[in-house]
Image 1 (cartoon, rainbow, N blue to C red):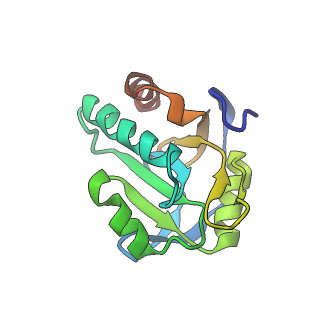
Image 2: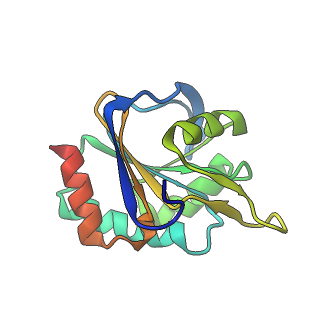
Image 3: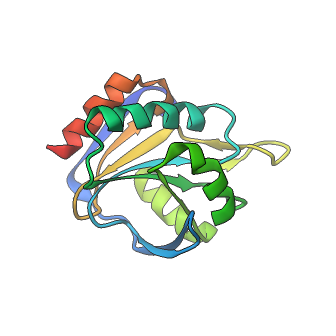
Length: 166
């Protein structure tokens, strides 16, 4: 598994993700995985580069596909310091992306199945994390992981999302 370089992993059969309760950026309890097609970026609000870059490309890719109403876009925070309020503030410029946070053990369960690594950097301010995005099918199962996602162009992200929509 590439930790940060471009690459992908397809799961056939699709992987079942653990069912856990998370909090949305609107501070509502939500069950994960979602029902319905979803794109889930693993990241956090204090990320200085990878996450904002990817989110900035994800929105135009989504819009270029006609903003499919049956597709959910999510940022799953790997930083236990990210509260629903922090996610709400961070995602103001990234609507309709939903922010999700939860208990560290719940996030770890999801990350382990998706093969996403993360840990605090020295000094504790930043989080080292796999530059990754999960694509979930209509039943909330993991069908594809994209690694090095911050290096993908808007056109490539659009292509990947279009593949999920088929």
